[in-house]
Image (cartoon, rainbow over all chains, first blue to last red; front, side, top):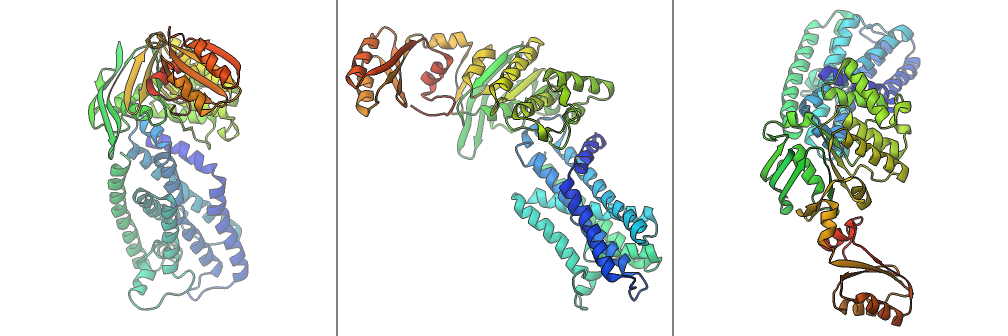
Length: 243
Length: 314
C-alpha cells in the first residue's frame, strides 16, 4: 500500500510546476551563469571549477527538497483535510511514511536529473552514476527527516518553513559556500563533517577522484547514523502527533 | 436493523461541554437528517461516530462493533463527505477516485470499473481526465462525494455537502443522495438547509448546544407544534411599540422581525389573527398577511428559539 500511495504522490509532485522551477531550473540556471563566469578554471586540487559549482549547487538544493514532505504533511494532516484522511481505513503514520518515501525518491531523482544534465551539457565529471544516486538518496533521506521532524514539532507552518530554510542556509554557511569558515575548532570539524552539504561533498569528491576514501567513509557513517537517529525521533513524533 | 448506536456520549474541549450525554441510533436503509445551528455539536458527533476523536464517556457501536480497537474495520464500511472539499487538485478526477478507492483496498479491474461507475453516477464521466482546478464549485462538490462513494460504503456520512453551490448542482446532489438510498446505502446527512432535510430525510434529529432536543419523522415533529400557528405580517413600518403590543397579546409565543416583516407564533384557537390585524392597522397599515401551517423550520424555531440558517436568536 505504501508504494501504491507513493505512485499518486509522485504524480502530484510531477505536477507541482512551481516547486520544479525552484528546485530544478533555478540551480541549473545558477550553474550555467556561474559556470560561464568560471570558464575553464581549475581549482588547486585539480578539479574544474565548473564541476565544483555543479556539485555544490545540486547538493545544496537537495537541502530544500524537504519542503515536499513538509507541504504534503501539512495539507493532509494539519489542514481541514485531516478529517477525511483520518476517516480512511489506513493508519495515518503509515500514510506519512508513504509521503516520506515518495518525497525522498522524488527529491533524489530531481537531483539525479541535474547530474545527468550537467554531465552531458557541461561535461561535469560525476564518476559512478550509481554511487551518485545512492549519495543523493542518503542526503535526501536525511533532509526529508529533518523537515518531517520540524513539521511534527512546530504548530505554526510559517515558523516551520522558516526553520526549514534555516537548516538549508546554515548547512551551506557551515560548508563554506559563501565565505571560508575560521580554521579553528569547532569550525574545522563543522566545516568537514558537521553539516549534510560537506558530508555530501566529501563523498562526491571521493567518488570522482578515488581519493580521501577515509573522509568519505566517516561522512557516510555520520550521515547514515544520524539518519537512523532522526528516523527514530520522526517515528516517535509521528505516532504521537498523527495516530 | 440498528447499524449505529451511540449512548450517553460526552465530549469536552477544555471546560466546554460539546456533547452532553447524546444518544443517537440509526437504522439500516434510512436517511437521517441531522439539524442544528453552528456550534450545536453536529460535526463533533460525526467525528465521534467515525472514531476520529476520543470521547470522554459513552459507548459507540457501528455495525454491531464497538469502536474500541476496531476502528479500521468500521472505517472500511463508512464513507465521509466532508464539509471542506477534500480532493487533490493536482490529481485528475479519475486519479482522485483511484487514490481513495485504493486506500479502501480496491485494485485492478474492480477499481477501474468502480471508478468509471462512480464518475458516471455523479455526472463527471466527461471530466474524468481533467484536473479539478478547472472545475466549478458544484463539480468539486460532486467529486468530493464521489471520493466517498467509490468503495460503496454501507453508511455514508455527509457533512453539509451542498455548502456554497448553485441550485442546479444542489438538486443534482440531492437526487444522487436519493438514488444512493434507493440502492440501499444508509445516509447521515447534516445541513443548514431545512428544505434539503424536508426533501430527502426519512427521520430528523435536531441538536442544539450539545443536546439532542428532538427526533422523529418530519410529520411527528410538525405534529408536536400543531397547537401553534404562524402569522406572517408585512407592515408599513415596524416600531418597538408595535412588537411590544403584539407580544402582550394572549397566546402569542414569539414575534420575530425581519425588515418590515413580522413572524408571529401564536397558540391555535387564541383568536389572535383579528387582534394582530387591528394592532398592525393602528401602527401604520398592513401590506400583507398570511397564516401558515407549521413547517420543520417552525419546529426548529420553537424548540431552539433560533433560526437554523444563521443561528440567529429571536
